[in-house]
Length: 360
Image 1: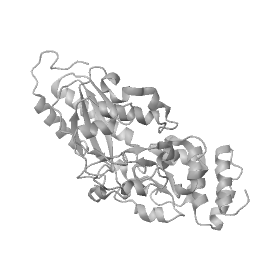
Image 2 (image 1 turned 90 degrees about the horizontal axis):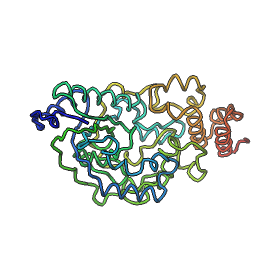
Image 3 (image 1 turned 60 degrees about the vertical axis):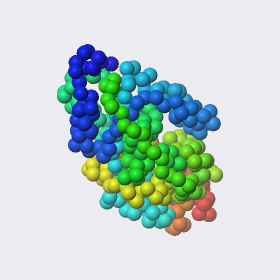
Image 4 (image 1 turned 60 degrees about the horizontal axis):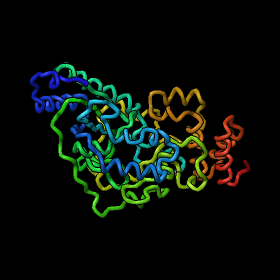
């Protein structure tokens, strides 16, 4: 990486940072901070987590090893990480608790009902970096949005954007936890911010609320039990012992955040791309299970949901239908896909029918 300071140019780095923050907010980011790159304690925590096997099938977590805690190995020359937040809570969505309480409706994690945040944030971060380059001259950088091996929550904490809660999500005193994170790794030695202090205290609401007991201890998540992992990252059969606890959650889970007291300060998304699409805030399970593969592809293209594919989408809905109140419509929807081409879907349909006392 190269930058104006290295080439002998005089650069007011404090002024550059002020310009960076101002432009970031203009581009839709709700908070910005700068962190250094040393994460020794977080690296030890990561290695312990991997050694315990809590990453499940997410082999990429292990493959990247300590690169995840060493940004300078991912982008040589990196000395600072610019961390940003962008709120995603959709103000126009149906009440989350009401949907969870209605077993006939599908619950989709509130972050996934609009456009894919990866694309939205990456585009904005790239523009931010290019605008800064136009102001100060060439410098090295790499943009990351949950797509590169980076300990984004630890870096965001060190950049002052929030603390890591007992559920392992980042929490901000002024904004709760309903936001996305993104980073710019850079060789510009910008002034760093003070790390955020923790404010969970003795609260354990998130631990007690987890439907599958995935938060096995404060700050320790066993992904293999997590509904978000099971419905998104996990490719095979959902373990039978967790199917009832999944309830009507067909993509992700927000329970640990819904009970967090700090989310009384959560702010709604202002970016129009995070508005609800296809009525996924309160759609019926029967209606979604009737989607064909082409309808799934058309209606979820451009969203985070699209990446799990039609088979896992169908697997998840079949499981939720097994937990839905018994009705003729539910049984008919399941029976219609009793002979689905996918063995994975057929297995979950058979389980769901059995929950209603119907022959598979």
